[in-house]
Length: 407
Image (cartoon, helix red, strand yellow):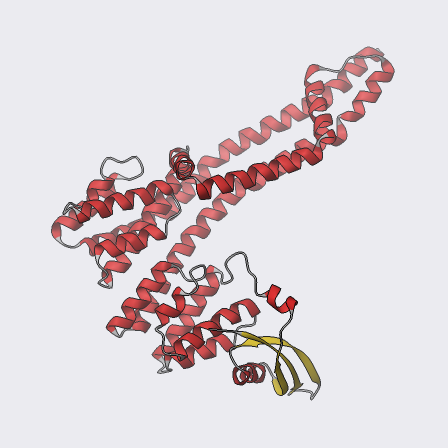
């Protein structure tokens, strides 16, 4: 589908003022409707092509945030339950968007649906914005004729995942802030404060304490090579990201370290096992075959170890074995996860057991995240207090040594 840019002139309905601007849409009629719903009556609408308009269409990352996607799905479900046709619902939701990049995508979805495509096919044209799980679930809902119910279930799933992710992020943010502040203060003291002692001692002919010299030389080195250090940090980050994307062995190493890391490893396990249980439960509940459920679930994970585990589970199922055999006795799994999956497979109620596991992890997440916070506190306090003591000594020792020399 082609979403064009249009230059318009319109009258503001509340005060009659003539305004002009640029917006986008699949047709002049829809642009006119968008303007009307925003309090403008169109006078002129004409196609607009320019280099700036084309550059504005280029996006590097996701356009639709997780929260915006959840809100969009809720609105879509509500409209469908109210008896609104799918193409009309897509048009209404596209027209009300204020972010031009989001509106462009929503217009594209409306255009596809209005042209006869299914909603799942329309979503699949934007893989960055709409996860594979969502596309699979929408396809199931369209096949069984229960799209609004599937939308509600899928939205609930995304909300649970968003809550868990937000809880983990907020927990990780605290130590990150403390560490950054401590490092910034240390750099300020090394670069801005300690070099002042150098001239003072040089004039008096005294010797600086060894600890102060170490910090001072470090500060001088950082000041003299600031550009190279910054470029080196940027190059290191870019290199790590490139290696992670292109080199499978490096991905596996990073994933292994994340799982085995003290304190944080438990949260990595919780996040991945919870997502596996929730996603498979959601798919099986909607009659998606196990093989396809495992493949779709695999696509939702970032950790290479867990992706490999699901690949192994797929092979086990294909060979007529239980998927639980891939997780059994594996360091990235937990006994409760393996046992419940095994019971579900042998009783023929895997979907129900996965749902129970998802509920268990949902309730357990708050406890484990709170435990993580309490575990991090002593480490943070020890690090910060140790850094403060060392920096105070590095600053105070020269003063004490200077007073002794003056006496």
